[in-house]
Image 1 (cartoon, rainbow, N blue to C red):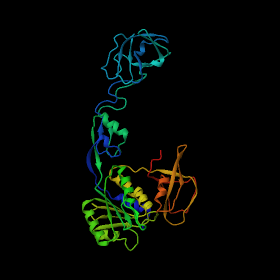
Image 2 (image 1 turned 90 degrees about the vertical axis):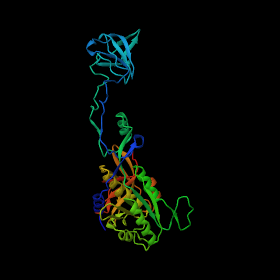
Image 3 (image 1 turned 30 degrees about the vertical axis):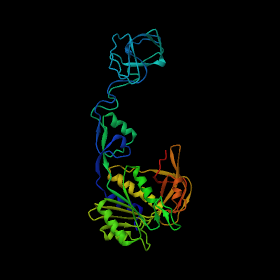
Image 4 (image 1 turned 135 degrees about the vertical axis):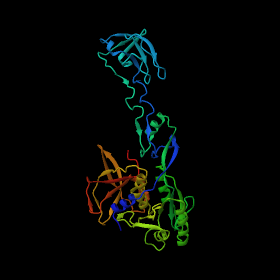
Length: 400
């Protein structure tokens, strides 16, 4: 049995080389950028009017109540006008090009417009006021985005602004998600009293889909020869296998033995943690095939995916796994010498993330997951954990 820290280190030490694919930017949110994106022009590309009002030469303003004759109107999307007489002004709209021979914009709230003239109602104006200067945000050729950046709606806006209708993103390795056990039936079937519907593989694939990570799903019955035959086929076709169930010490838990017979080297089996102790991890000798064999209890599967599998794939794609901590909101006692992943509900108070214990009914109580936001990682060196202490937090739900 290995510690949580050692298990995490071993998993992260292996990497799968991602492929590359081109996707439409409308389908790119959540994906990981593979290419560098540069500004194809200045941002903004012209000195941009930031307020509706008038554009003037600041040097021509003398005092409150001064009147400027309106020469013209500069509309958004229209070519740049030029102020002919610097004692006059041009009406301007937000987003329009700043007219030539002007260097200040006075908003309508500070004006009185009457009979083709604008009277300024404030005592002072400054050069550059209410103007977004050309190139202030970025210069042509500047790096805007780099590989490893997770694409959100904000990045999609940048991609659109530089004319990128499609973008190169990292492709996830070909992956199989595998359930096992004769007790499992499909979700559209009526279970017998001794059966349950599949849920773990659906939870895993849903979590993967949130990242854009697609996979095929398979099911293994409790027959060793069939398990071996099916796993061999899956390993021939897929680079990553994520299994749920069949890794404990039961008489029908064939998977660890079969994987080793198929040439998958065991890197560890059993982690000093709760839930998820029976976790098995291995790889082919050349490291081209990676296998995560997760315990079958639903909470164990869920925890192991978010603690080990998700950070592993993000590492493969060049994304930094940022650590998050939360402050325990109530005392907790846990006596076994195991790292305890406590289910918690979270709440932000005065900028601090608090974790409220909601342990539920153990690793089989997946209904409890609907009431929590993640797991607080409590170290095995202690048995009493006091409110106010800070520990690593693994989130599987948006907490904002």
